[in-house]
Image 1 (cartoon, rainbow, N blue to C red):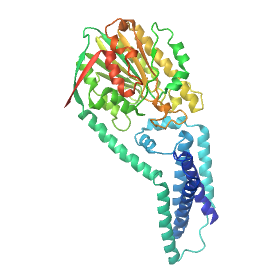
Image 2 (cartoon, helix red, strand yellow; image 1 turned 45 degrees about the vertical axis):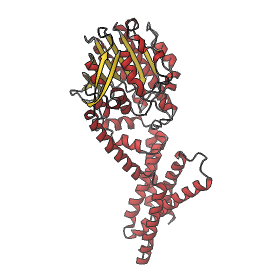
Image 3 (cartoon, rainbow, N blue to C red; image 1 turned 90 degrees about the horizontal axis):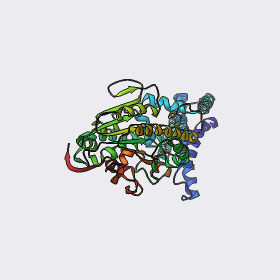
Image 4 (cartoon, helix red, strand yellow; image 1 turned 180 degrees about the vertical axis):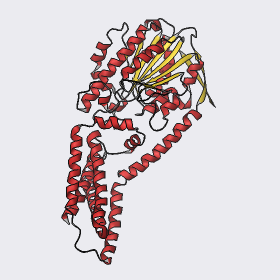
Length: 479
């Protein structure tokens, strides 16, 4: 009997302890009695459910124990693994990533997992196999009365177990995430259909101009500033130094939503506006074209004159096979776009930046800690930014370059997407202007001192329009 109880007690205690350790309410605001009562109920319910379930199906005792205990140990393994790797428990965002991940995404993630985790996983399941092998079938089967009593207690413990874990158990969390995922697919399908018409006017229409917008990925301002000397050293060759903006922040920790707020705020099709105003538009991305579904970014960039994706393993009309998965692969495409004969150009570069797993974002990664890998990825991004600025300066055009990150990341907890975490919502931003641009009449609205205080990613569409010398008037009619 005790071996059977221990078999269920280990995973239940594990998940309960992790739940207490990560509960945002468990910060001293809840009484000790409440937390004790909750944890005791969770343990009693979980162990009781497993124990009485085994008794109830005593005719198939070993099979019942195997089925029930394996689920317990599997859930505990998922909880513990998520906690160790990301300092959090599975929540809707984690499930959404899993639902929408491709095989390439999974391979990149598991390659970043340290070896010790795999060793610990093997030991974990060996311990389970050993404990299960020691369980002995009861000498005699339960009587009908005992089976009825076990069925009643099984139901009671099932209710208790669900009540104490209804908001965090994997099944409910996964169900909620699947509902969100379904709504997201509907929203994506509606993006293009709901696009609103615009009227755009280019100020000083005879003046050539190029605007390069570099959208970083998951870089927070703190780490950028910690590596600021590295950035300044790598960009010291520039005649005009980049102008740092130290109060930019992300409205949401979502790449897709940030990109949509830049290109299609309130469903207003700004890409069409730029094209109508005589701009040739380029979308050059080192991120994947899409995940399993045609994502929001793909939907809002569909009207670009040229749209290329370089971080992929196949060649089609939209994909470009690249020997390197790193952001420097965008330098040559940028050079080609800058050499385009169009008088007015809007060029977007979408970096992979410091997206998790961090060790996959820069070459020759040797660092083992997430924090070290994250800083190394930021320094590599500095190298890429320096390469972009070198091309912009060499082009000898009226060029303005805007860089900002879509959102930040807490390198100690890369799955945390809390909009209130400064690691997530404070992002780096800078502007760079060529001599030609500074001498042109376009500069007035785009000067840094004219930027709104605490510039938000939702305001970047206005910043880009100012850099381009574009006035946009919207209508309510769909395109």
